Length: 120
Image (tube, rainbow, N blue to C red; front, top):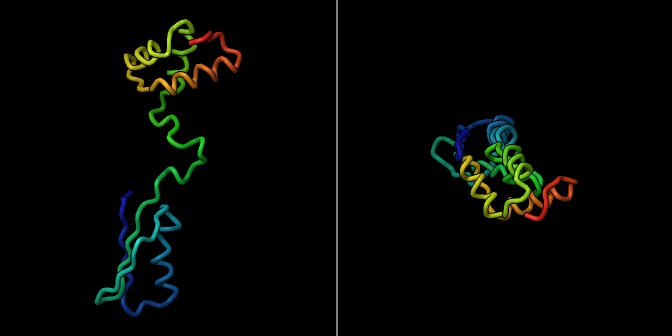
């Protein structure tokens, strides 16, 4: 999928044909119309891909992009006595990049869920 999509509407196209051509990128691939320019043979429309963040609810944005959240939580559960900084370093050694804020929030959530995780 391209970030920019260009659609040409030929000169003399019917209203229905022009509508079909111009609405295609918006309906199918989540593009937003940026600009329409007249050209000698008709018109050229430029579309920009809408950010994936708009497709999700606020709590789901940027979540689990690398698919390693479950593995990271398993490390947190297995090491309840470690500090936040130690947990971040342990995750980094496993090639799981999580920051202190994420680790802290997850420790709090795990504690709240009845986990054995003590103050981290």
